[in-house]
Image (cartoon, rainbow, N blue to C red; front, top):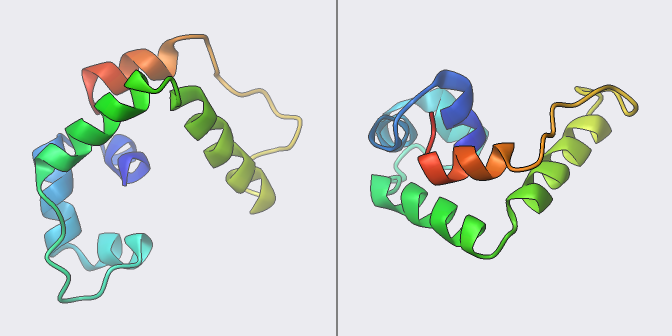
Length: 95
């Protein structure tokens, strides 16, 4: 969900609303049409726990690996992966 949120430049509140109301988001998130979604505070809490555990880089690497596997990112392509960049984004919140 945070990837969709970042891609569309949405606030936590807007992303939570998109998960509740938009069929494309429900499809991409694997939610049923009647799924009530989640509260915006869940996104903030998720990012805080991610940073607290020092796992933001691991998450980025896992996402990139899945994208490579799907052929959406070159296996040896250059990725912007500066140290701390994902941590800053995670702390600040999307966007």
